[in-house]
Amino acid sequence: MSGGVDSSVAAALLAQQDFDLSAVFMRNWDTRDELGDSDRGGCEWEKDWEDVRLVCRQLDIPTTMVDLSREYWHQVWEPALATWNEGGTPNPDVHCNKEIKFGALMDRALPSPSAWIATGHYARIQWTSSAPHSPARPQLHRAADSSKDQSYYLSSVAESRFRRTVFPLGDLHKRSVRSLAHTLKLPTASRAESMGVCFIGEKGKFGDWLSDYVPPRQGNLVAPDGRVMGKHTGLHKYTVGQGAKIQSQKERWFVAAKRYETNEVVIVPSTDNPALYCSSLIARDWTWIWDDHPPAAVDSPGGLAVRCQVRHRQAETDCIVRRNPDKTYTVSFPKPEKAVAPGQIVAIWDGPWCLGSGTIDSTDALA
Image (cartoon, rainbow, N blue to C red; front, side, top):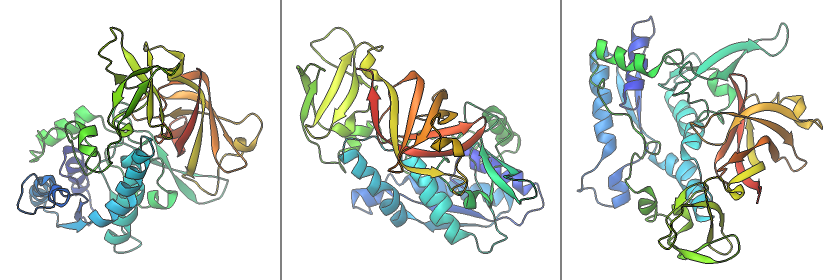
């Protein structure tokens, strides 16, 4: 449980059934740790932990806290910092689900093979057989509420983890969840939705806060023809597709690329500039949720025709996926895709079924 309304309602729904329940809260980040001063305030996890205890006290569920801050730092935060340092745009939330919530937490918190984990994610597990007379296997499916679907964030979690996972909110819409929380008089019913990085929270101007971890390197904002249009104070403060304020220009300019070698941010005018679009991308570190059963079409000349997202809350789009000899994957777009950022995650679906994902390594821009 996180202390939010979603995990609170998930717990309440399970408490209405015949389950032997216990709740676990993860402490993955502490503001006092980053400040290096235990006497200073701003400890968000303590507020969350108190809300978890209030809800569990009402539901009569035993609860405990597990400190995974060390695992989060080494397995999620340090790799993300390395990507920012290299000019990429990482997605810590995807890696947090794989390495922490469905990794370290499951390994530590599930006491026996008969124990399962339930979370407040908006996603569904469907059980099906991959062949006649074979045992059923879990598939990760999109949630009923497409506006809240979180299968993108779960796209790198292994099938073995989903074999012991329940998503009580998968068939519900967010408005129904909020309504249930009020009906059940849960202490978190009116709590605002968190929009920050997983387990870190909202940090105001994120780029400025991130500068405490990524050493700022001043460089140039350049046009495609090499003209210097301005200065920047760190590649980590920009991502592809983001607006770039140029005081000397009346029209709007946008980030088209970041060049780590020269410490330059390439910017272009107009939101429809061809440099903002790409026809394909290369993805590395690919994860198939069914890792023993990738679709055969990825190795065929025509490739695998599926749908994909290159960021959360993006409308899914058609694509063709092909496996390369070096084990990277080429994802091609019949219709050019806008604002594809290296370092982010590309996830693919066959209908509602999420097949897996990889990290975007490079793109083939139109200009």
